[in-house]
Length: 307
Image 1 (cartoon, one colour):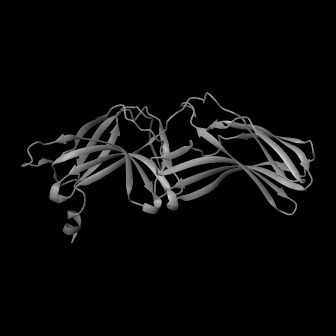
Image 2: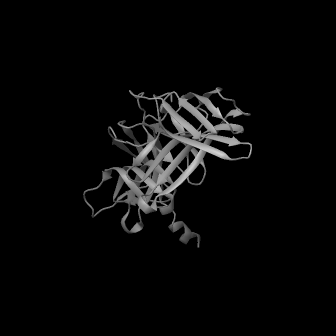
Image 3: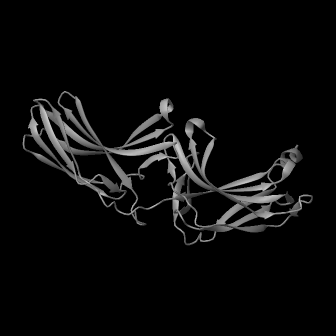
């Protein structure tokens, strides 16, 4: 029985080591099982190099026809779990024998270099409610009838943007005829992930009793398309602007720091699979607990290597 069980165990252990692993920044990545691991951080157009180590398990011999190393960018919808849509796929055989009549055999640890130059990785790594975008190195040892052995190595991609050349302020009005008239203003419409939202709210007419007022940051994730579109909205932050009744002519300042919150850049129709947008949602509650809303989309981007 032990012999039968052992026959189905992998014949070797595969590990991936990046060339600059000691100096490259490591960032946390949450896996599907809820576990958080530290992985290397890259950005688009970088070279990705390193070595694959194949170490036979004690007493076992590794026979193979070739070792394939692929760099994959993939999107997975959680309602279609297990099916990945590849938007980046780079592969090369780094150790392939021309004479297929003979198998390569070894019983000691061997290493094989790999190199992917100036890799185009246009989208950032993303783990959402219903979708994830990931980058992996996939190592496959081809063994014919014995069954291939596969290993994956995750890494994270973040891409940086310069400050926008045009960044207009947001000015809007909220009103209930003959009861309430409010003007609010945000200093800009595009924010980097560590930015500060500054603004002001002006009460021009107040004939209802306002109990409190909050400013929320909401993330809206849209997956699929057409009739199969699914939208998930999360409230990431809730900031109390006012507690108590305002009077006509009063103004309330807004100062909301974004750095404490887990934000991502805005994603617009990524590979025709999903979008992620952010909104500022102003909420007023009167003494009868009626709620009044005014929502405005903002654009998020990642600024510089310190963001």
